[in-house]
Length: 443
Image 1 (tube, helix red, strand yellow):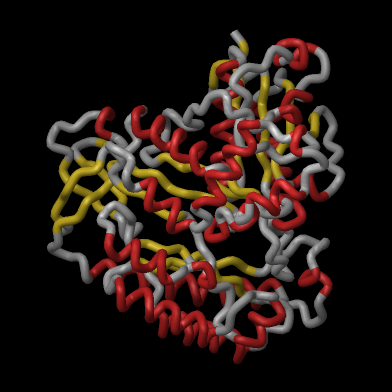
Image 2 (image 1 turned 60 degrees about the vertical axis):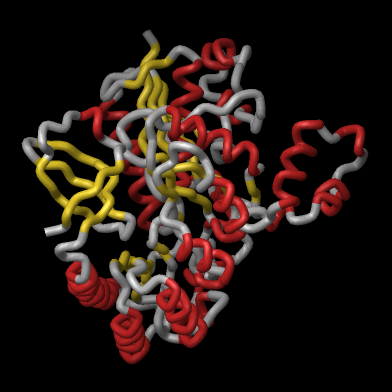
């Protein structure tokens, strides 16, 4: 029996990639195990210096837990720099969207060049199978990859490349299969989720990049047409929420500039779309935002949030914030703190600045001391706890729908559409209820 384990770091997109890889491995005859496996893969993250350090530690952990395993490093880290670790085979490409439905070279590749087949994973349309069939209560699906924003602190455009959207039919088919497998909540994920379809907006433009129409596969043309007909995220969601058996859909993360009026209206009107938006702020100071190369200022951000809340008063707005960006003065930081209080986010994810050395921000003057970054991060994290508590209070005594994530002892723990957890009595529910959506009173 061939066994494997995948160690995943980073974003939900990486988690999806790992799930797809797991599905491919199992079709190749591998079985998942916890330790002492034959094959251990680290799906790395390189979004910051800290992430790379964690990826290195994860490789060391994989080697320790699986002393006789073939070790492979995939993901973003080897994409941006040459990584030489003794006893570790390094993948040269990020895992692609989908595994092939059949891989006749799998066994031969595994015997000869180790994990060279990792670099052969294609976007075959022959078959769609959900990536994650256990261990999660919600189904994460990657519908988009790549980014062309080039924020000064971010390495992602260099690791993930240009915008790439999956075809509408392909996405719908995978979600339908996930629903058949028992998932009731689906989370749409992407590196630049709000720009789904923009890279394939024009079928004519896409075809113009080909040398000859003869070389274009019929399947590829159909995929391009499906995007060209309905090129907005909101348009895609309109079709997703019509899927029979789907309980609700959630957006993983979206930029403020991509929250369109169409999307706001759709979210407000549909009870199948979670009233939750994760919108990265990064800084509440305009001068810092400009140095970050973010595509908005605080006025734009505030006005859009107000528009969202007029349509959905109870909506949860969660965010990411970076503290200690080069040149961030104490006043800049206090401006960010003040702005966060004004917006009243429902949850904060706070990150001390730790850009990769290849990003422009890493070379900027006036780098901030680590102790200052830690102090500022602590202040905002404490503020985030208070904001989260204040937000949850408004739901006390209300009946809420939750997707069950854990069942332990006599309690169930589930996530509301507003992205906070609720506990309730299990009333005899077993593990088979994980992933189901039920109504509970929030006391």
